[in-house]
Image 1 (tube, rainbow, N blue to C red):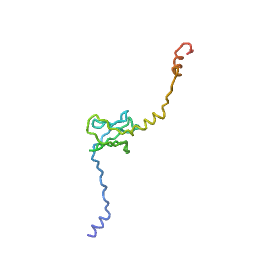
Image 2 (tube, helix red, strand yellow):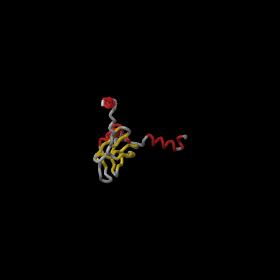
Image 3 (cartoon, one colour):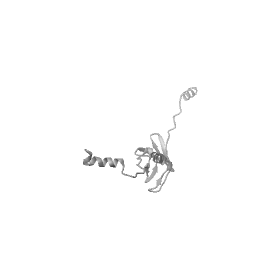
Image 4 (tube, one colour):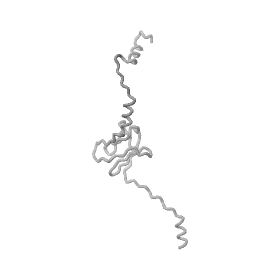
Length: 126
């Protein structure tokens, strides 16, 4: 019995295998930052547009990952052609539109339009 106990002291417990009870499939993010899963569209942050992602479909939720990073989590919809989105996924786009778009009022033709007309006219020498 002494030999058996000394042998068990040298054994290391095996790691518990991780099992995720979900369906995993890859999908492409659309230009509208949506991922289609089982006929429904789920939003992801706009920075992931046009990329391949991993969709994990659990019984009650859908998790979307890019590489090892979880980028979106939604309550799963069992309907068809439904849109499930988080408005926060579009905040970066709205911020960009608000802070980087300049509205110009013009009372005459644009500079580029004038230049374009001058290039085409025989008087411009070109």
